[in-house]
Length: 203
Image (cartoon, rainbow, N blue to C red):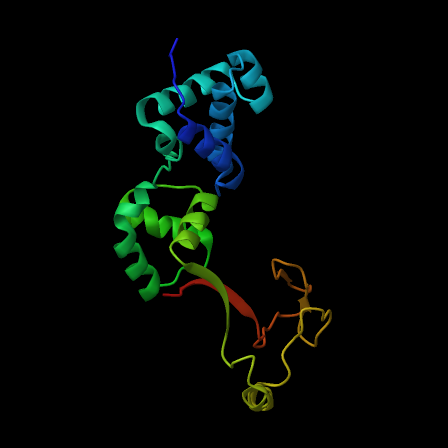
């Protein structure tokens, strides 16, 4: 068992930091050591601080080796993705050839680095690099009414997602944009204004 001695300066520092330190983990350490300086037994300190006996022993060892300052050091383990080593290459490739889907982005990363990751991991990694998923309207620009009007004069009003019957076929407004042929009637597609998504770099 460690035999710890607390000076009056250390006691005052522990008492102050257990309330005023910005990180709650450090506050917990200070609380445990302050209770220890008051002579409380280990099982009672662990109960009051809601920590295990092993955690309390680790706090005591920190104080024994470095005093109050050692209790302030936080060395959390933060694993880094293997893709981080290829960050510059990935950013350059995404900037030059933005992928249309997250699966395409995953295939791109696998081709560039040889590292395969799930769609969720790829999405988080790209977001961590500062890349954002953006909607990009197809020509003509959706935000320009004049261009839209001129385009519609040339090709006619586009089919809407909610349209059902047309002169040439049937358009189903489902999420997959499913098209079915009507028996005996050739299906002719007219231009439809739509949007697609792609990963765009924002540096």
